[in-house]
Image 1: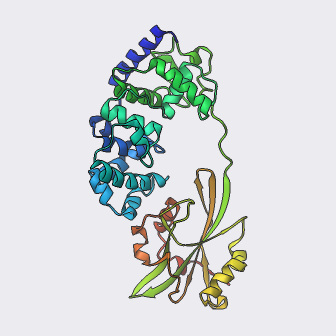
Image 2: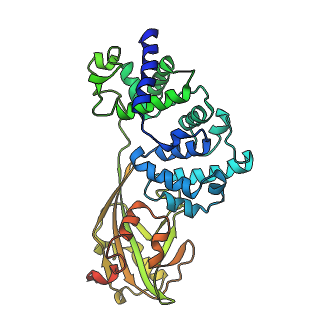
Length: 373
């Protein structure tokens, strides 16, 4: 694209945005706190899904001081269902830093923003351009797609060389006079017009100088390198049930290891390296040792087994079975927490467990399934 075409794109993009932009709440503010919240939510979430979470989050924590003072458990519970929970943990941590170090005001320095947990180059540029009108371009997936097509970039955009090529060409069309509006406009254009599978090329103001359109590459670009191979994991969740203070109780576990669902809550869990039937797992050394450690006689217990659940995460495919049994209270100690069954849903749970706890027969799980000896 020559300089004339670049100038044409800049002006027509802003005109397109003025006509077609969605009315989103974070576009009506220059407050970096609200902009930051929206950007973190939208990192791995569509606008349609993230909008309700944005309202919930900002209504519950209307200022960064409210978020900094919150209990992490409550923050994660509010985030439940969005996935990628490290985003919520990082937000809570960063809120505390901004309150303590900057008296609740986000720094307007790119370098200082990058030092805050959970804020990378894209989010820092978004905050600075939208809140402070700094002349920094943003490169989310929508922007990379638009630029890759305009300039027919054939390097994979999820590589260092590909991203460098995107940024170099983005600088040619970037509007330094109104950076915040330009960034919003090109992201919106990618989301609504230059779409992933069905770009609206015939009605596009840029089709006369879009290289991908000229070369019939718009349905191929942008290119991406293959993702990491998906790993299958096999989990068994045990739900011992006992009565305490006239309430049916079980145990929850707060996950602290650097693994999936860090800082969320789940039940007692065991993992196998390959697919194993529940009946065979109940005879396994790892489980019989668990029973022995807790002075439980296997012959005295009826186990109740759920159907097999499948749950997909990034690079992981989980295969999960829930197994329940009635027992006297166990002396499990930390990190397990005695919890009335009716209060399980009050804790921040992974989506899989949230779905399971919402099933109609959850409270009667151990009573409705046939025993397995």
